[in-house]
Amino acid sequence: MAPFPSGLLVLTAPLGALPRRAAAALAEAAGVVTGPLYVHLQPGLRLDGPAPRPAAPPPAAALLRALAALYAAAAAHRGLDVRVLLGHGHRLARPPRVLLADGGAGDAGPVRVALRELAAAAYGCPPGLPALLLSGTDGPEALPDGSGAELPAYPDVAVGGTFDRLHGAHRLLLSACCLLARRRLLVGVADGELLRHKVLRELIEPYELRAAKLREFLLDVQPSVLYDIVPLGDPYGPAITDPELRCIVVSSETRRGGEAVNKKRIENGLAALELFEIELMEDPQHGLNEEEKISSSSLRQRLLGTLLQPPRDSPTLPPHPYIIGLTGGSGSGKTSIAHRLEQMGAFLIDADALGHAAYLPGSPAHGRVVAAFGAEILNKDGTINRKVLGAKVFGDQERLKSLTDIVWPEIARMVRERIAEAGAEGKAVVVLDAAVLLEAGWQEMVHEVWAAIIPEEEAVKRIVRRDGLSEEAARSRLRSQMSDSQRVRQAQVVLCTLWEPEVTRRQVEKAWELLQQRLSRAPAGAAVHLSAAWRPRAAGTGEEPP
Image (cartoon, rainbow, N blue to C red; front, side, top):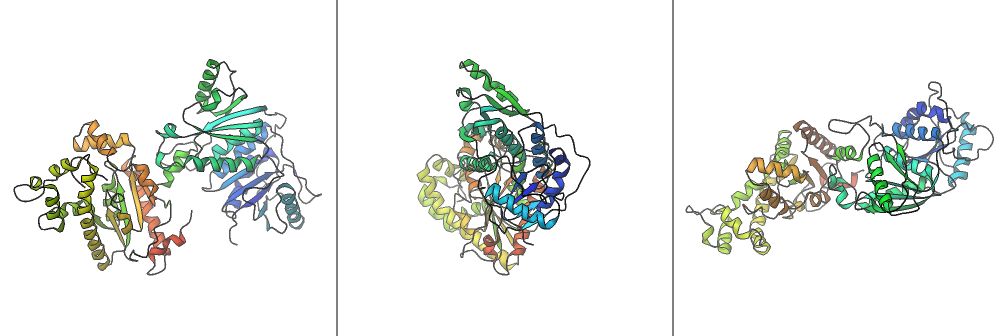
């Protein structure tokens, strides 16, 4: 049976039993649904009894525990998009294509009929949708519901965060907000300077995309609340000036931020907000150098080495060999990645070495460079003194372009010759190691761009240690180059050498293994058409010219 793009799972177990039964239900549903899995909680309902009438569980402590159990269970299935519905009577953003019920639902025939009736009444689903019964498990004895402990209610509630790649902890936090807010939820989404020190900030989704995903999730989960989603350029946002707010929802990690908001509110003559705290969720799959809690930074680390966008599909690219363009700024660890790829079987082309060859006497570029910049750039033996030449073009974009217009085409010609040599030798994969790959437009020669990135502070330390430059000179070098954010936008694969060498090695091996899988799926002689099968983007440094 082919998987469905979306589904509605009706869970009828008592809320106290859900923490025990959620894992089994979601594990089975994860093999059926590839997109959003909407979960409708109908505790105690007999689907094989009288016609079911949709009803939402009351906003009580037991419901919050059930939500925590469901989102924690979902975390064991990477990519499973679980949305536990707290309201009904509305159309869902991505209508379900299959209906599911847990194993305790009752007799199959009547249950399927009831499932369709319930889905139609609650969410306007069309009749005739496939209805499947999960095998489920009775599990241990149910825990007490404790449903009498009602959650507090506030007309207006606030919450803040980065909300990058919505994960289970985000969903629990937002669901708690939906249970507490009776009228409006103000959601502050970190942006700008607040992202500067985030791990792998270059991989954080744009604000507009994060806000759109938030709104879709919230409107699916609880459409009766008014959602006010705003960008945050500082840690406080409108929460310190909005007199209608009564509560702010925090985690144990962000409680101090909530207290700081209250301090500012009091300074502004406003009442302090009630702090409602949600527990952090443990990540059952956290790896080396990842946080033990579910976090966006861990999810971004897992993207390293994976295909972020489809390979280039260009009729000008040869089907064989398959060409990877590897780029990165000073101190990024690009060279060590290139050598690791060579060890795993890639044919390595070092564009920097070819660049040195382009300046040698007798090369096509040598005479043109001397004619353009004068004989004073020559050493006594007729070779070009690249430091003298670099001083002539540093800081002068027009002269730098004159130089690169001469040199870069010559390097590109030599690269093409080396690619042809690799093809003649039967090499399957070529890696073009080129710091200026994107600046020179050489991405037109490759099927995929792989970018090595590193935080600026770490790059500065490496350059100072390696090249003996001052910190100021190291920063100047980095800022004369393309930024990591610009590279990431054009890269198919991103790698980062921030952590121990073993972590980098595993990233590169993962990237190489996934590349081999892509190549094995491509039809013979059709490597350039890999994008059709895809699922899920320098100026000189001052010392030497490019």
